Structures are given as structure tokens and as C-alpha cells.
Amino acid sequence: MTWNPLKKNHLTQRPTPAPPLLSHVEDRELDVAVQRLIYVEDTIRKLTKEMKKYIEAVVNLDRADQRLTLNLTTCGLAHLNDEFRKVVEDYHSVTTQIGKTVQEMAVLCQKTFIEPLKKLRDEFALIAAAIAKREELVAAWRNYYNRVRKLQEKKDRTASHIAKLERERRAEEAAAKDLKTVHAQLLVELPTFLDKRLEYIKPSIHALIMVQLDYYGSTTKLFTHLMPIPNALGSPSSAMVPEDEYQQTVANQMNRIRALTIVKNH
Image (tube, one colour):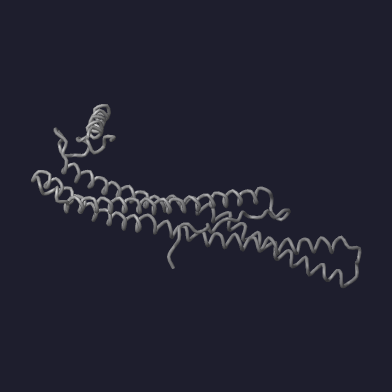
């Protein structure tokens, strides 16, 4: 079954308070932890969704680039001038190399970012099940608690009434014990999970940075070699020009394009 990052979150239910068995502080601590976990799971879902969109955008851009350069190389006009033909062929060669890099980048992003976050998000299904179990225990305890109170309010003091009250009280005590045990476990385990999540995610973030550094670095290097900037020493940083000079160059090029016959109004 294909994993769908757009599916609903596992963890959506906040814990129900259980006074007077649990204090306001105990209920509040668990509620805060669960709200933080709900936010974390939603963030993980959004990160995964955006990464998939990012990969798709890069792949689609590469496909468009591949089609463009292929059309240029097969265009008859490209072969009327040797210098222009060489530029087109070099451009096609660069996009072909970049295409391989794009595929590698997509695979690495999947393995180092999406898949680890998917595994982390799967843990929220277990947390949601633990919260659901607590909810069942709260409902069971509250049921016994209310029944005991009703029996205590009755003025009937027959032997059968007293025996029934005692049975319900023992059941209420057992349910209370189970609930307090599970609640205490959650108060320990959920904050621990929250603290450890950063240690788990950090390698994926680091890997993503390294993958993008390699991809954009190699892409910049290929295009810099294709269209070297005068006086550049070979590195992408050395090919940079001052912002005002860059903007002026862009403006000049746009004016030249606007002056072409093919873009003039008729």
C-alpha cells in the first residue's frame, strides 16, 4: 500500500480530564504534551508534503529543460552556424548531465528525508493508540465512580445493597489503579519522545543540506563552465558580480530582447 502524506494525522484526540482521581496538574501536563505532539505530527506531515512537491518541481523543470535542449539540437537553424551549433550541443550536454544528478538527488531525498520522517510519523499511530487506551480507562473508571456515588446516595442499607456497593467500589478502585498507571506512563514516555525527536530528525536535515549542496553546486559548476563569466576564477562564488552591476546587465539584456522584431507590437 502506497503511503499517502496527505492522509489524516494519527494523533488528533486530546486527553479527557479525570477529576477527582487525577489532579488538575496531572491532567494539564498530559494535555500539554499531547498538544505538542499533535503539532509535531502535523509539521512532519507538512514537511513531507512540501518535500514531495519540491522533488516533483525539480524533476518537472529538468524534463522541460531536456525537451528544450533536444528541440534546439534538432532544429535546422542550429546547424547553420558552427558557433551557435556548438553552444546548443554544449547546452544539451550539460542538461543531460544535470538530468542524472536530478534523479540521484530525488532518490537521496526520498531515502534520507521522506522515508525517515515516514517512520517517525508511524510512531504517532502507537501514541494515538496509547491515548485511546487511556480514554477507555477514563470512561470505565468514571462509569464505576458514578455508580458508586449513586449507590452511596441511596438510603437502602440491606445486605444485598451493601454487597453491591462493595463490588462496585472494588471495581472502581481497580479501574482507578489502571488509569493512574497508564497516565503516569504517558507522563514519562511522551515528554521523552518529544525530547528525542530532534536527535532523530537532525541527520535527515543534515543529509538534505548536503544533497542540495551537491546538486546546486554541481549544477552551478556545469553552467558556469558552459557560459564562463570573464575574469571568473572557476568557482561559483568568484563568478558573482555586484548587485547593481547585475541588475544593469539584466536591464540591458531585457531592452535588447524588447527591441527584437519578434516581440514588437504590430
